[in-house]
Length: 91
Figure: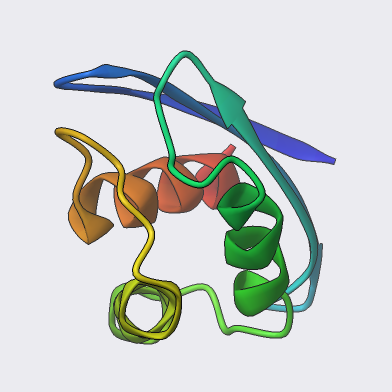
């Protein structure tokens, strides 16, 4: 299991990651950030499963998550999530 953290403007994003080659097979996101509604975090994790770990694919998946769910993450952008995941993948 790979692990990474990223200090975003509003909290730390912690990522636990299991890869199958360069594709996410399992991901767990946690930290001291806010996400509304709370259950949206599980949907974000689900939307990232099966995604190739590179900037473009991760960014597309995270942006689609925001579009599809209307989730709110105050002071966190898709770039913050992607950076946290990439850090975990490099660990």
